[in-house]
Image (cartoon, rainbow, N blue to C red; front, side, top):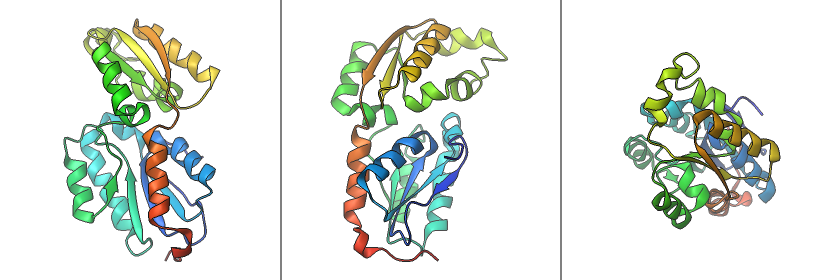
Length: 220
């Protein structure tokens, strides 16, 4: 798979009729759900995961993907949460008639809303990691926030946090260890919660059902 920190396309079938635009932070999981479902009529394209640190750029990046896909697919879905865009992403998607997965961020739709609300109520000062963030903690969090260059900023960023909760999509001891190390580096308590794919799997399944394979068209 291409570097999810950058944009990439993953063509999954010949003449796919539906496109799923995903965040690069969901790339591995989105492709895994599509493969498990055998939905060769779905194509996946991803915006750069590094935009997590610059959410103001997300709406334009998604709109470029939509415009590039026009005339090639019958339907387009967005496997993206609001991700800090303050509603700007929804305005872009509404303008183009594209449906996205519900939720303000991937932590909620991985954990599902009731479970995430319970975790948040239990300890508001919680930093959440996913498989992606555990795998790319150095690039996205440590270097992404400049802590490698300015370690004195650690308390400014995380001084009000009390714990790290790793929302695990898979059973992976290596990722568990990475998440533990990340919590140690931040000086926070550690907890692991197995979520699986959560609502992401339901959303991709709905996208696949909305455009059956028999409706496939040839991309042009």
